[in-house]
Amino acid sequence: MTVPDAERRSRLQAALLSPSIRAAVEPNRIADIRQRVLEHSSAARKPTTGIIAGIPDLDWSMSMVTRSNRLVALPLLALLCLASGSLADQQVTGPGVFKYCRGCHGERAMGGDGGKYPRLAGLPAGYIERQLKAFKDRVRINKPMIPIFKNYRFDDEVIAVVARYLADMPPDSLSLWPYEVPQDALAAYPSRQAFAEAGARTYRDGCARCHGEDGLGSAAEATPPLVNQYPRYLDKQIDDFAAGTRRHEEASQCGSLEGPERQAVLDYLVELGRDAR
Image 1 (tube, rainbow, N blue to C red):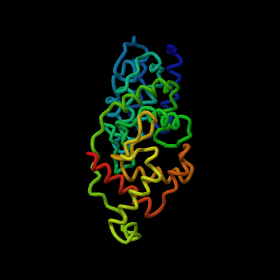
Image 2: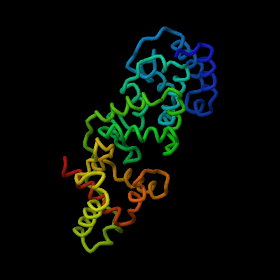
Image 3: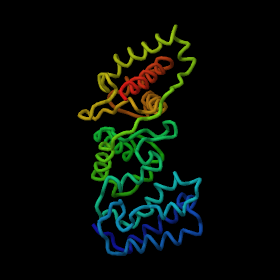
Image 4: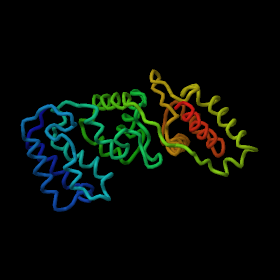
């Protein structure tokens, strides 16, 4: 479907009036952005490797964004360009869609900031699809994801494309060692060996059925690996399962780990991942 120029201009004007866009972009560049997007949205389009036809990437947009606001502005600028309606007219590619994820998840989709942003590379495509749809439907809430899904074209096709792209991306090894176990968790056990054995036992009894004895998950079952993932991220997901803010059929089991026992499992997963390298 081709969106009429008048509708493109209307969408663009609405986007440019957004307080979030204006806060993120240098004030004297708003007019420049408007002109460039309108020029691209009115021009004849050719399939590109980017998600936005006629605009190969957002490098020119990011040059207009204040340094302190780049992580906030990236999805907002993506939404601004998508206001032209061009996404419906062009070829969707994995690298093109992933451009809107790199600001948080990194060039190699290995996450960062100590686990605030998880590794995505190599996760099962079915799992990534399920989580993206949960974000889109607000079943799983993550504020940085909300602007992305306000675009009407971020549909099942786009989600499937980027999910396959990430699943096929070979993951690097995260630098998780040495892993510092909280001292109060260690103190709850008579020895370091007892702590390690408790983590292994709890994982085997409660987690291995879905995530595998090796912690690598299952592509066939769309179950994510738990090794080579940030302990901080896993810890947060356990909290979310316990609080009911993240859901699935095994949420009560996943959210049941507490205190020293949880830390023992996280330590076991770190060591299990190191053994698998």
